[in-house]
Length: 480
Image (cartoon, rainbow, N blue to C red):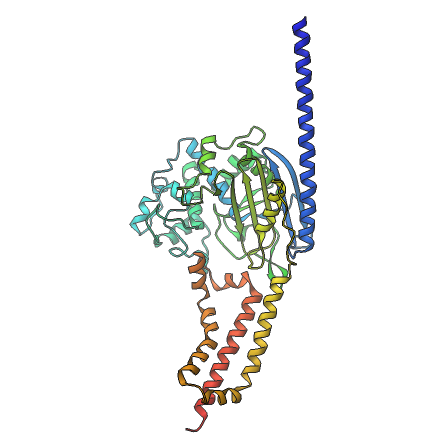
């Protein structure tokens, strides 16, 4: 009897402590939610981003989901509004591949061609590309060898992809260097389809989305196919968001998923906890492998970028949609942010994520954020100043000629060359981007990144080129 009474007391104390812990945890989560809400309201008041959605989890507990602002047709954004998650899709594709690895159907270190007999590439070095190298983005394939963003006609199917990629060249031997390249993950989606015997969207629905309860999440092979599911995102023009349709792009496996904040919370929780409400997609071994780079010198693992043992991160960018995602492997927090605006030199989407993670990690949030119009405004003022100066200079050819006669011929040639330099730089802008960012883009896609700045710079370059022509003509017409 005495033992039973003692046991009852211990049990009651355990329940009390457990309920107390739950109460403290709930209070902490409420406090974090309030801080996040206040932070985002402040940022959006000082921002030109029309709409975003957020999800925050702690292990497998969803602590905050919400939508802010408006969609492309001016409807309120909610936690159930669909967004293109862009390259966050790569983590899902990696999960699908690792499921097949767990089932013994794929060996990561065997050539991928063993599983895709239809994969025929003329460069013999591609015969040795493994599944692991595709996942780690160390296959040797890159935009320089296969410029997907320059194709006027995009692939529609895997068959089209195989036809296009047949003549690809690798830029280095497989396994040597990292090159972020979407077709690595397009081939992985084809690998899943070949090994499983199911269409890639069907496989994802049955083996990833449905088990996690991601009822509003779908996979698309092309941006042109999501028009009935997702509203237009936005580009920026003179600091104002302009709703437009995403340019056509084949995105299967690399960026084809459309999801919501509520659904993405479930994905985050699975990543942070290893399972979501007892649903496990891959083994613990595969989850650890997913977060392990190919070697210490590289930061890309399998659908995730790593930050030592602290966190894994990935960003996603289209021309009209963007996304940011992080999971802290040391404390179980996860955050995803979905934006209905695309790549732009004046938009720092990562700073939103940094602010949220600072709150979660009990750090002081940087509140010294410049107003959204500051950098676009400064850039436009600088451009307008130089355009005005150039126009004034264009009509001052007589004054220039007086100075020209007192200078050496070579000095005058050097000054004229400086005038035409902007138009040469503009002409070779795609090549400069290729050198600096290792990405190959068409002129149209470059224009959509910053149509205002590019238009102003083009006008400035043209006026200065005209100045050179007018001055040369004036010199030629002068009597000897």
